[in-house]
Length: 264
Length: 285
Image 1 (cartoon, rainbow over the protein chains, first blue to last red):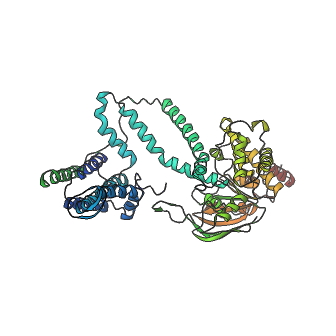
Image 2 (spheres, rainbow over the protein chains, first blue to last red):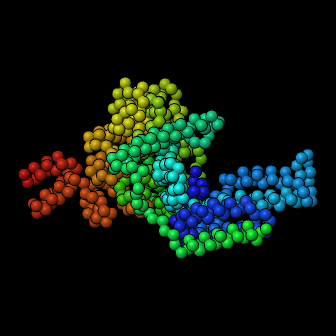
């Protein structure tokens, strides 16, 4: 649980921290999109260097990004291996039944690996430098047009921000209940799989119970304070599109030109 | 059982974050059979000391002695289990840990984990419930349907049921009304004396300290600043002021009376009743 870097915010003062969350969100999405249009290894390496530069700019240590990749490393390696084995062409080094290791396969494997790692890195850059509430605000803003087809955007963003808001509380509480049950002689992560699952009951049940209680309280408070989600409201945190966001957008445009014009 | 901490340091590492030491080179000795209160401002490391005693937090440096067991960085599972069996820990708002379908099963959770037989479990559950004043007819009820005060009792019974020799409590009466609070403390004090327990309690309330504790540990910034008897503590005004500790009600009253009277009272009353008696003896009233 504590190993999970992805989705965690690191307070900092880098220029990436100060960018508009809307820009960062769009940037991350388009950047990931662009990765799928890269054709030669040269461009992969170019983007990889670029990604590393962006990571360096956040002021967060590289080791922390690498930790973010760790939980997914087996999935990545699986995909890469599959890619290598099933691609043929170029010089063939080894052949076994329908599988072959060829120079094309190796190149594609390397590209797949780089693409996966870059996707994780760049989304980690986004979540490490942007507070969850900022991401929610940005999402709300970007999804606004959906209001015209009667999607309850306000409710969705309220749900999302409440959910995000309570993740730290839930983690805290998990820790507390876990300690309390350990003190009563519970041992976690021991015995057969069935026993390990059973051991989760004393942990999960109190968490559920407390969350339900809190949800009820919160609903009551919202009601009492006269909260109505469909009202037009002003915002405490206002998103401001600043000069650096304009520069960032130009940079993004440049990247798109590189991928779609120069690469051809 | 005696508790002894020898230059223990500890911290909480959460993923890539490593907070600076929550406790730094703490040395401390709590006598067998003492009722000790731990006081200090928020973040002083009070709860961490309790967790150390139960092996829920392991020292990064130094070691601690709990009875015959030694706890250190690389302690083995058997020792840890033995310590947890001997040290009962009541957390803040312990009712948040209730989970079983019936009150009986919840109280029996601890003893079953520690490997008591069902016959023994039954005796332990009954004894623990009697101690905290839970009626037998509640055994088959769901703990979630009880009142807050009763839930607290079930939770405490669940800890007592393992028959610990050391009891550590983190604000056991937080959030209870004055009456419920007194009931819990009286029960704890009675249990402490009857079973000869070693009791360590974290509290914010100085009135609890005067009423129930024998000695006090004052903590600040992860260090033990003083360990002295209750009577001594309240005679050291400088110490109280330095660590922003409030005087208990009875002592505030006594001070006001002394100021009005212009002379100090010789006795050291612990309750308002004792104060009244002392004043009568002095002929002040």
